Length: 273
Image (cartoon, rainbow, N blue to C red; front, side, top):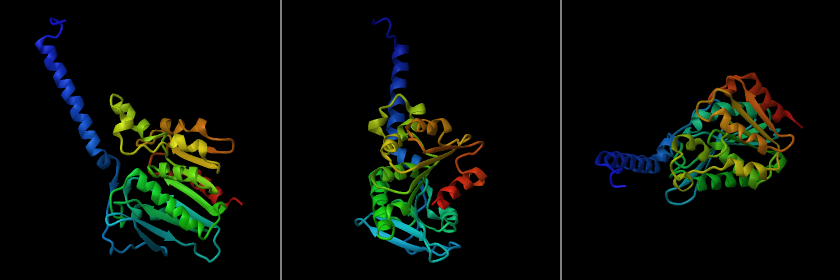
């Protein structure tokens, strides 16, 4: 045994162990920076959206607040509201361009910025993102019945949307470029680490899907380089009869709105009676 552990082998093992520990420690402390890419705005910053809007700010504590932008319908007749949970980049400025597809179909669009994004203060955590989703839903219920509420998640927001739909009733859940879980996204590269205890964000979408009674529509592109199509496909066996898994051939992570099938599917859901 002593002969086996030669000085050269010991040096190699030491380097491997140091590399393992170094990468693990760096990944643990830098994961929020790697996963989330917010752009924060001053509370007094002015939005310049082409459509009318209103803003709501909820102060949670001295350091944390939620921020919501509400886009109303063009006329006074409203079919309901779309609660929109966006991706991991920038803030509502990046996603406001998607609001007209909802408002022109008669649905208000309420978009939530997570803590640290836009005018929302603090640091985003999975628990806070869920809390904001519940509060947004409770606000919507003051105006609308569950059958008038559509929950929409995009990218990282699909985990938040799926959680909300598993906890509260709604008319429809739409998931654009979802993932099976955060662990499943990271595991191919970091399989050697105890991800369940290391990851700050778990977002176990696969655990929420079976609990959702509302109709579910999943849309995903075959050339998605951020959340692989195969990862989202793992959710398909969890869907109930009547749910949809829509494949956008050639679609990537950020261009699904360019595809007629994507737009037609969303419109079909919005216009359904």
